[in-house]
Amino acid sequence: MADDDKRDEPHDPTGPWHRRYAEQLQELKVTQTGVQILFAFLLTLPFQAGFGKITGAERHLYVFSFVTAALAAALLIAPVSYHRLHFRQGEKPEIVRVTHLLALAGLVFELLSIVGSVYLVLDVVTGSRWAAIGGSLIALVYIFLWYILPMIYKPKED
Image (tube, rainbow, N blue to C red):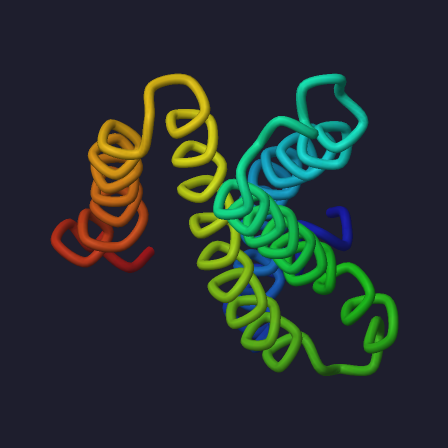
């Protein structure tokens, strides 16, 4: 029997923590990729020819979206460093708890960056009225899907 298979045996009290951490890593892979793509896109914008034409308010919104994407990336990548520094020290429950908190905080900043980016694009393309409507709708959809829906439909414990 492989070491990984032994982790979830009934006599191994850390088994569920190993499984939870593996699940968290899978979730983080998805969120890290998304925020890294958004961050990379935002990194390139100031070097585009038309960037100098944006208004002062649009520039502030860009900076907000850029900084929140950077913070989201930091929070969503931090569990890797945390795990490396605490690896094989018998601290799996603490690693899972800290990773959970870092991921939740990272998702908040990712949400803010996405909404800010959508608002910015809509503002440049259609004007501030449609940007406010579109940005608000996107925020509501994300908040519903990421926070409200999981609270309404809680999965049963394994």
